[in-house]
Amino acid sequence: MARPVRFSEAGFRVEAERSAEGAVRRGLLPDPTAALSGGAAVKRNLYRAASRVELPGLGAVLLKVHRPRGLVDTVRAALRRSRARSEWDAARYLVGAGIPTPAPLAVLERRRGPLLEQAASAARFVAPRETFAPSLTAQPPDKARALAARSGRLLRALHDRGVSHGDFHSGNLLVGPGPGDRCVLDVVDLHTVRAGRPVPARRRRAQLAQWVHSLAGVLGAAGRRRVVVGYLGDADAATVRCTFARVERLVAARERRRLRSRGRRCVEESSVYTSDLGDARGWRRRDLPVEAIERALAAHDAALARGGDAVLKRHRKGAVVRAGGVVVKEAFEPGLARRLEARLLPRRRRAGYENAHRLAVRGVGTAAPLAFVRRGGRTFTLYEDLGRLPRLDHWVIEAARTRRLSRARRLAALHATADFAAGLHRRGVWHGDLKACNWLVEETGTHLAFRLVDTDRVRFLRRVSRERRLRNLAQLAASVPRAVTRTDRLRWWRRYARGTPWAGAAHERAVARDVAALVARKLVVVDEPIE
Image (cartoon, rainbow, N blue to C red; front, side):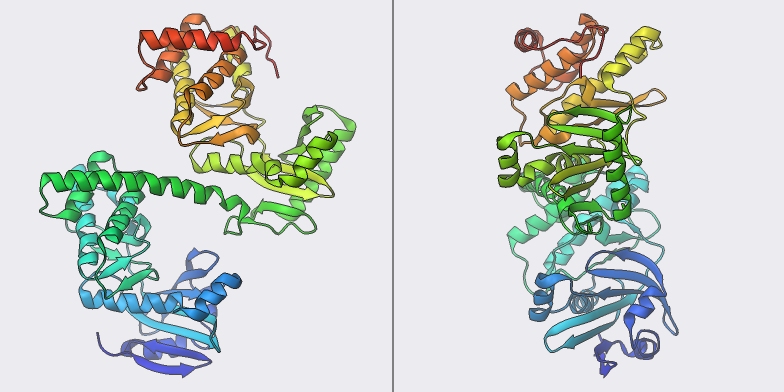
C-alpha cells in the first residue's frame, strides 16, 4: 500500500490514506467522539463504540472510538499500541497480503505523555453484509457446504500469510450477498491480529478450534469436519481424522471456558451488569434503575408487615415476596452459625442470583436474575416475576382433574419433562431440590417449556454422577402427584434414559429399586402438593 500521510492536529497524531486526509480533517477532527455520536450506532461495549458515519468525499465510513477504562486498561494502553493502532496496522497488512478486509482509511491517537486519552480508527463501511453464521443458515444446503469449506480455506490463507487473528469467530467474518461458493468474504475486528511472523502449529489449532466453536450452533459434526477438511486442503484421511479429533477436544474445552466466563458476568462490570447501587452493595442489571430496586424493597417490607397473597413463602431462613413487579427473596440469618457463615462465606448469599444467570447462559429456562443487594445487614435477591406460570405439580393436578389432555398430548408432556431433566444432567447441571414445585410450566399451544426456580442449590459439574441423578429422580417421583400413573412414570423413565448407559430392562429394574428406596424416605405427594 502507498505510504500514508502523517500529521498532528487538535492534539491527535494522525495517519491517513492520502485520499482520506481532507475528509479526516473536516469530518473527524477536532473530536472523533462528536462524529461518532452523529452517526448510526453499530456496536458499543465498555472499551469502544462503533458507528456508521458519512464523511464528505468518502461516503460511508465505519468509525471506532476507543477509550481506556479502569486501571488495567489504562496501563495496557500506556505500554502497548492502542486498539485503534493495532487495527490500522493489521488492516494494512491484510490488504497487502491479499486477504479481504474493509480498506483502512485513518488512525487517530491523543496521548498525554504515555497515557492514552482517546484513539479512533476509520475504515470503509461495507454493505450489505451479514455475519457468517446467519449467512450460512440462509444458504441452500449445497452452497452452505461450499461456504463452510471456504471459511476453512480462508483461515488457512491467513495463517500461511503470517496472520494470527486472536478473535476469529463467526461475528468477525462478514459475508456478502450471493451463493456460498462465490460471495464476498471480509475479515473484520482486527485489533487482536498479529501479523508478519509464522503462526505456530499450536496457535493454528487453537484458532481453528475457536472458529469451529463459533459455528457449533449452526453446524453438526459433518459440517465441522468439512471446515477442518477445507483448512487442511489435500491432507490424507488419517491426518484429517487426527486433526478433527483434536479440534473437537479443543472446542469442548473452549465451550467450558465460555460458560465459566459468561457465568461470571453478573458479578462484573459489563454492558449488562453494574455494581452501581447507590448506598447499597451488590450487582444489578443496567436496565433496572436503582429507583425501581428501592420501590421493590419498600413494597417487600410492606407486604411482610401486612401479610396476604403477595407473600409467596416465609420461614425462618427467608421470605419470598411479589413486590413492585418483581419477586424479592430475602435471606434471614437465624442463629450464630448462619451469621458466621454469612460473614465468612459471603458468596453463598448470592448463590441463587449467580446460579440463575449461569442457567440462562446454558440455555436453561429460569427466572431472570435482576439484582443482588446487601443493605443495612439484610440480603435481597430480585428476580423476574413468573407468577403467570403454573407449577408443574399444580399443572399435573389441573390436567388430571379436567381431563383436557388427549393421549398424544399426555405422552408429549411426559417426553417434554423427561427431555428437560435429561438435558439438565447432560449439561452437567444438578439442582439440589428438583421437586415439581420448582418447575414452572410455560405452555404455548401444544409446546411445553419449563423454568427452574429456587436456584440456591444448583451445581455445575463436569458430569452428574449416578447418585446425584437418582436423588433428582427420587425428588421428582415423590413430588409429582399420584395422578401420574405407574405406567406413565415408566414411560417417562425410558424417555429419560434413552441414549444413555441406563437404557435397557436390567438397568431399568436396578434404577427402579434404588429410586424406590430413596422415595421411601420422603414425604410423597398424593393429591395435594407439598411445599
